Amino acid sequence: MTTYQRLTGMPDVLFEDQRYWRFILTKIQETVDLFGYQRLDTPLLEQANLFVRGVGQGTDIVEKEMYIFDDRDGDQLALRPEFTAGIMRAYVENGLHTLPTPLRVWTTGPLFRHEKPQKGRYRQHSQFDIEVIGEQDPAIDAEVISVAWHLFTNLGFFGLRLYINSTGCPKCKPAYLQTLIDYFTPYAAKLPPDDKMRLQKNPLRMLESKEEFTRSLLENTPRITDYLCEECADHFAGLKSYLQAIDRPYEVDYRIVRGLDYYTKTVFEIKADGLGSQDTICGGGRYDGLIEEIGGRPTPGIGFGSGIERFVIALRHLGIEPPPEPLPKVTVSYLGQTAKLEALRLVETLHNEQIGALFTPGDRSLKAQLKAADRIEAAFALILGDDEVKAGQVTVRDMKNSEQTQVHLNDIVAWLKERL
Picture 1 (cartoon, rainbow, N blue to C red):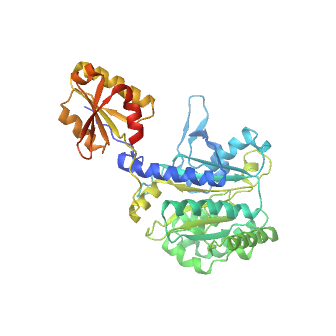
Picture 2: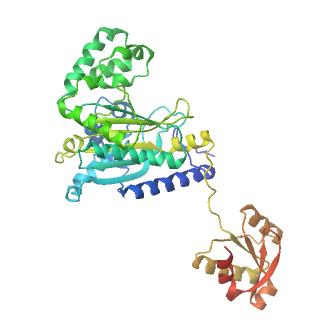
């Protein structure tokens, strides 16, 4: 018989992890509500060229990681590898430019990248994503960073560290890219294959290299902050002043470029203590030219993404225990078929009254049914037998002290609501 297994890099999220997911998603909802963000969801499938144009040909996402296929209509489609391009497509297609700006949106859901699976890095993974569209003011950059900072603080992360940089704009970036090419070209013969490709297709990504030889060259690499045009320099100075105004400590790290073609001006990362080498919990930046690139009118934007699976790993690593999932506090046990029918009716009544209740099927012994109530740490077990049905009553067992009392079936809802 064929045995089926999950696909490589696409994990199941089982019950114990679901406690963390519930905790994380609750904190996300609290944070976006605090800052006034609205939810916007996009399809898992998009036209592949949306990401090729938006993310960029020289990126690992496009070159190595996208799941691309031809559908039955002959279109080339891609599973969503990141959120921003799809959200910008939705912004243009649905005429969201008519809404008041800045437009603050958020989303969460699965992304797909065919990369080598490792801890916290999966081929199917979920992200929390924030985007603010239609505002150039660097004060909004500071706000976006604050959204992330508040979320991570509320999740229990500590020792947060903010790193910022500017990647310039189409006016000043080309000159800097040529400077990088001029700097690295004398070493081209010694560069690892991936970095040789980056030097040709996306030299800015040389600054993100993890290759030992390339990293040895980075100490003397020209810094983009020395090549910014006046507009970009003013924007970066403004961001720093706003971060100082809200007492948000930061460090300028000229190696942060975030690797995607659509980034302009601000890029940033947030790290946390106690997580070892996997300490980056958030990354994002500004993409003022992306909407125009995919066919919209020139519109600025900024956002960030964070992986939910990495949150789970980080919380476990830090020993942060989420609250237990809320299980029903009432069980309904029965003895005999007549009582079973009444038990089913009683469970339905409790559910209609928004009282969590669990019914135990299978005609098990009363002892087994009470053990089930004990396992979920129920407060009360309601017991029905032939005598209770005839009398129109239910026996209520207090699971903490094993004391039992009789309550009329017509009164049980009010009785429970007073005590739960």
